[in-house]
Length: 79
Ligand SMILES: [Zn+2]
Image 1 (cartoon, rainbow, N blue to C red):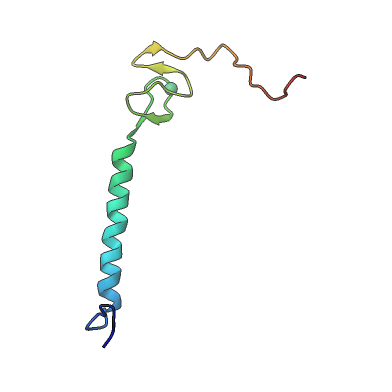
Image 2: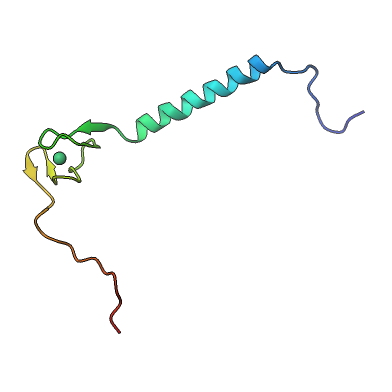
């Protein structure tokens, strides 16, 4: 006798493929729930819903992020 449980019958390719196909659709549904992309009304680029647009910095017609200001990125460490 085998020590661990063994399947009684061989599972068909179609049956296992059908099962894995449902996993794929489940993962896709989860991704849709994580982030909803909407088109920005002012610049037309894709951005995450309920957040300021990263391209123009506007949210519901108000300027939230100042795009004119240049943020200095630290590229070199001064000794
Ligand atoms: Zn925008």
